[in-house]
Image (cartoon, rainbow, N blue to C red):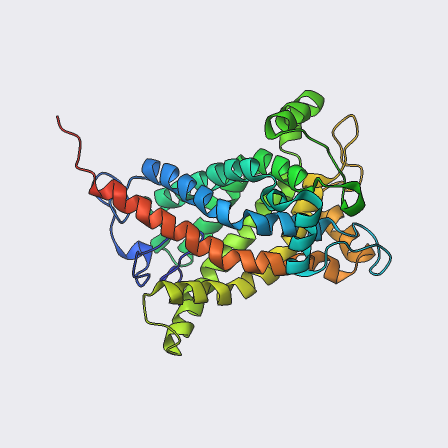
Length: 337
């Protein structure tokens, strides 16, 4: 498969047919990428689309966070497991925190999706306008770089989101409990104790997580969607084919990204000393080694079920909302003199 052919997520290609690579159409004279929407508009539209999808997929983020923190640095079978599998874990969250518990950290999640996806779509849109995605492998590289930049910008929001989603009753608590009262209180507390640098604690896990996930998704989605259509499961260009392709591609993405996701969650949530240094992990590599040595290699795949179930729907929902918002912008008449 040529890089970018029909690629979908996390950076949209041709819509709504999903059949043409983004680099196959020249940018407009004004520097806008295919579709006539300038990068600045894609920043806003990408942020809005990511936020809309976040509302629907945030419960899986809560479940994933709890599963990934469960049994931290303890050998398998030596700790209680209040969270077992995606469905039973969701039930445990509801029993402990009520139905609203499945939307814990939603405000921080929306802020993260807005910042990360806005910057990510903007950077990728700039790459499209410049024609960089037309180079061999350009789509994957541009996607990975744009994802890394977006992850860096949105890291403080992801930090707070992880803290809030981990908080629960002591009987079913996993990982360190930061006990923030609100999203604003969390930002204020972290900044007051550790300054600006404290807000970017854990970013060394976030950047490779998003970069690897973006590259894997871009490299596998189009092939997976084409495979579904070739087997005539769904019609070419249908949203059902896109969703099915996303779920098939999600297997590869979940396998490659989950270890980075677990490390990222642990780095974000770990307790810190007065100087802001982690009490459990010194950094990305130390966290990776400690998890694999103390929890086994399967410890790096905690929460993979929730990661996988979130990937396809979030990808398609983000793209669907992005496409609809783009249509609304394109239908607006140009401003008069």
